[in-house]
Amino acid sequence: MNPSISSPLLFLGAPGLIGNQVIPALTDAGFSVLAGSRRGLSVGGAPGVGVDMRDPANLARAMQGVAAVGLVISDVKDMESLGLNVVAAAKSAGVHRLLWFSSFGAKPDNQARFSRRHPVIDEAVRASDIPYTILRPNFFMQDFSAFYGQTIRTTGKIFLPLGDARVSHFDLRDLADAAVSALTNDRHLHKIYDLSGPEALHTSQVAEQIGSAVGRTIRYQAISVAATVDWRPGSSMPFPPWS
Image (cartoon, one colour):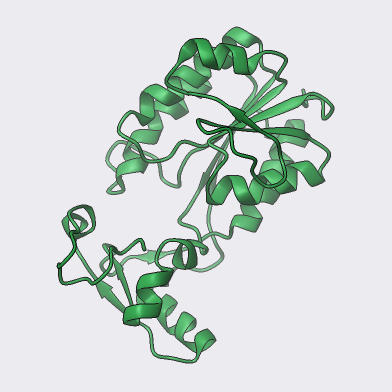
């Protein structure tokens, strides 16, 4: 069943790219959204509420009177335990709908670290008996401006450990539309959706498109995963690749 739009929807992990795009869309659709984070920041016009996903008692209090929960978890060391805490608290509180933002191709052997870890939470959501939808978006188009923008502007290069892979980057605006649909239409109950963009592009093609838009040459330089993780000031990259 659809969560009551008049009842609160607690969006956990609200600060960040996903929350800043999805929360305004949910509000525009009529949902009463609470933006949950450790610092209790307001996000996308939604009032903030302090929630610590590492504290089961705090989670239990935050879930009181909540009809639906949206969940985003950043790539932290204890990601899996945070997800399990939230699912357990939502089940105990009798939450009517759970929307979990997983990742494209989430499986234990995925080369992307966070996608290797998401299956644990995926399975907990499926086994929870809470009506759920799992959205698994690919890398976002907006990553290039939000995370790599300073490096691109300063060096004219995109440093990523993608080799010759082609990626169908997804638009956050489409994710927001998917989230609203998932929470307002029962046909999405107990469904998992892998979400990707319309065209798989080599990162050199992405660089060409960015360069064409800004009027300068932008190039892609493939790096190793270790170079991404172990970046330090003074390395061959003047900025970390995500800056």
